[in-house]
Amino acid sequence: MGEESLRKRKGGEDSRKDGQSIRSHEAHTTNLQKQATLPLFSLQAAGICMIVGTIIGSGIFVSPKSVLANVGAVGPCLTIWAACGILATLGALCFAELGTTITKSGGEYPYLMEAFGPIPAFLFSWTSLLVTKPSSFAIICLSFAEYASAPFYPGCDPPQAVIKCLAAAAIVIITIVNSLSVKLGSYLQNFLTAAKMIIIAIIIVSGIVLLAQGETESFKDSFKDSKISVSSISLAFYNGLWAYDGWNQLNYITEELKNPYRNLPLSIIIGIPLVTVCYVLMNISYFTVMTSTELLQSQAVAVTFGDRVLYPASWIVPLFVAFSTIGSANGTCFTAGRLVYVAGREGHMLKVLSYISVKRLTPAPAIIFYGAIAIIYIIPGDIDTLINYFSFAVWIFYGLTLLALIVMRFTRKELRRPIRIPIIIPVTVTLVSVLLVLAPIISAPELAYLYCVLFILSGLIVYVLFIHFKFNWPQKISEPITMYLQMLLEVVPAEEVTQ
Image 1 (cartoon, rainbow, N blue to C red):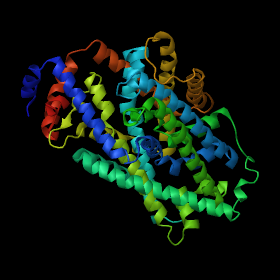
Image 2 (cartoon, one colour):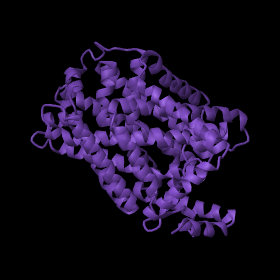
Image 3 (tube, rainbow, N blue to C red):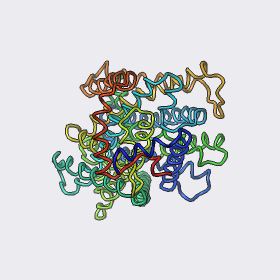
Image 4 (tube, rainbow, N blue to C red):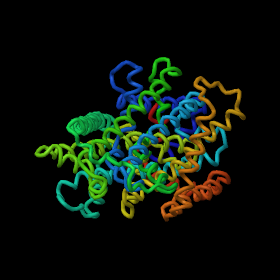
């Protein structure tokens, strides 16, 4: 369909119908996400299950080694995992208040818009599109590649070239699957989620059995040789909180819950501590068969655990961990189009990124965009560097969003707040986020943090030139590109499909 005919069709519509069409598309997208994520339990139980299923992903198979490397001993390591769970719970309660006070889609974007105006909101969407979402996708696929390749290189680390090529192949496959079919992506997600829960249960049960048999050597003098500093604790938190990533999305289950203003905080208070218990038990399981030194030397912690505990059926562990990590990557890609759609609708991104496929009703341009940026991150990066890069960026905006909650308590007193948490909670989490952002820069500066700041600040230039002043020449350049991509990908604006 040509660009001219699209303009003619759009020109005859009034703004009311456009708004209805966009809302219809948002409702359609939300329904697809519900079908893919919510189990057929009671609505109250569904909230807890969704929390557990959203948070538990690849992080618990990757982060234990990095958390231990930063604090140096078993005791501080387990303490960090528990503290990360407490921080995630408090942060989720703050987001529950925001989500029920400002009922707009787009993650942190509408909260920042309401509290601080368009510039911080734009910088959030800019950073999410170019930094946090693609780097998250890249980290998960690198995790998959490490576990998938580990069995083929017994006794040594797989070559980086193999890991990166395998990760790039995973990104391409997931991108294609989610671009071609929403149903295929959701069916794949259901299968991979089941695999994830199976391997977690196997590791925890095995660890409990080993503990009962007296395998407690690693827990004697568990704080000996620990290396505690503000920088090391911050970096350990970065890696631990990566495993809890997803806690900030929990306010999206409001519509799924019966009596959400009671059951949403209840689901958070039950769900995230349940995840925390699982994570602590999994780490304890690892330490029943490995000393701190052996765990740090392991290329893939869960594979080493499987080799020592489940032999000759140890192949189950890398297989199911690979399923789990690829499931997390698929889930990330499955929901990737949401923020791009909102940013495109607001005029903060190329319009073509908010278009959807005529035939398949998938946000193909947004998904392909995410896949391409993720592959770029894979080329120079490794998992630890990317996690620090991701965490640094994401905690800047978590802190700003929590500050928005505090500010609106005083500037927007007229807003109805169905869930109102004690002010000390957002103040505490905001101060922790400031510490998490500043401590690594001051005590252990790295280039990754500089690149991240430059990426975020470059958004100011884009905003001033293209959003504030609205120069015409970028539109003249983008129009033929948009028309070509429309014809190539067979995509149109969402309102054209929902009519």
